[in-house]
Every structure is written in C-alpha cells, then in structure tokens.
Length: 296
Image 1 (cartoon, rainbow, N blue to C red):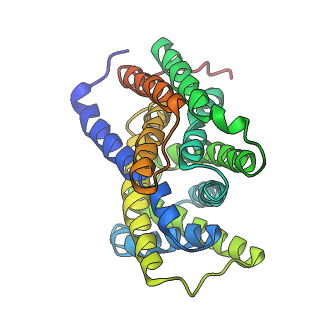
Image 2: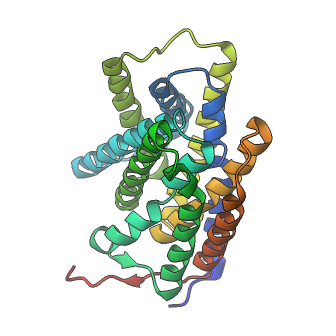
C-alpha cells in the first residue's frame, strides 16, 4: 500500500526526536538520588504541572468511555515506569533499556486483535532483526543471575505494560485532543504512583537539590518531549512502526552510559546494535501494515 510521504515526514521527524529524548531517561534516573517509586511519581507529577496551562486552554467534551480508556492507559503507564525504573537498580542500563524496548513483540502479537493492523513482510523481517539484536545485547545477563536477572524480569514487565499502554493510547487519541489526553493519562499515572509509593513506604521528600533538577529534566525531556511526541506519532504512523523505532533507545542509552558512567558494553553490544539499527531502517521503509482479518 502506498504512503503519502509528504504527510508522513513530520511524523517521522517527530518520532526521531522522541527516540533521542527518551534515550536520556535511564541516565537521568541513575543521576537521581531518590527511591524508584519517588522518581516515577515526580516524573509524572512535574509533567502534569507543566502540561496544565496548555491542556486546560484546549478543553473539549470527553465521553465517559474515553475517560475510562484514558484512566486505563494511565494505570498501565504507572506500572511501566514503576517496573522499569526499579529495574535500573538491579541490572545494567544496557540490559534494562534493551529488554524494555522489546515491546514490538507484544504489539505485533496483540495488534491484530486490538488495533486491526499487522506488519507486512518487511515489518516482520524488521521485527526479527531488532529482537535478535535485543537478545544478543541482553544475553550476557542471563548468566549472571540473582539481582541482574530480577532486574531483567522487571524490565520485561515494563515492556508488556508499555505495549498495552501504547495500544490503548492509539484508540483514545482518535477520540480526544492531544493536550487533554496527555493531562488525563499523566494525572491518573501520577495518582497511581503516589498510591504505590505510600503503600511501599517510599521516601518522597528530603532529596538533594541536584536530584530535584534531574527529576524536572526527566519530566520535561524524556517524558513530555519524548513520550508526548511518541503519542503524537502513534496517531499518524502504525503502532508497530512507532514501537520498532523505539528500539533505537538502547543503542543511544548504552553509549551515554559508557561515556558518563563508564558502563562499557561488551563485544555483544556492537553486534546487537547493528541488528537493531538494521531493523529500524527496514521498519522505516515499510508502508502501512496490512489490515488484520476483521474476523479476529
């Protein structure tokens, strides 16, 4: 199926900027001297504060069903951040980010049922390349066990919840304005994380001043700029293509970690990174996915 390339160019540029922004998330989390749930909560709370003036100036009626879907997306987003940010306490940045970005596998499996779309031939080949790369990158941790393995499992949970969040978000964005959508989802997510933090006894005050700065950057950069543009792109591009592009995050995040924290990746990183980049390039050349069988 042909694609209107002039119409898809802004979405492709937005997607590239989004991937670059979200790639800094793991670095800012590591720099923050705060509990994982505290980091996740303030990331969302600051995002809501920054969004509020913009979103309220563009208010419009929203149905009860749309509110419900947005709330479900917010809970899933909270669970994604809770599991993924916690994983960074147990395993390396490279492994955590690589595993959490395997969400295209779940999107490809569930997309025909929830989005009525599935990848074409190039999309399937791109998924195989990219997921093969993630397996090469993360394989080293399988032999470590213990803390690293627990961190890998938390990152995998983050991948599942992120995929579900994006699929629900695709439906909600068809019914609601973008600013209102972000405000609703982030508000529900912040409230969910606050409840989890209270239940878990996580410390929410007394952080070093530098940590507050990192948390604000985390909200403004990776979250609002990165995730905001991802949500904007997913309405204009197939969810599968958006999820595939996110696989560029582990490559950039691993490079940042090597420079800033001396987390030097082993030889497997380079082979895995090549496979991931090849998958992204192939996915970018894929047209709109073949519509799924309506009977599914």
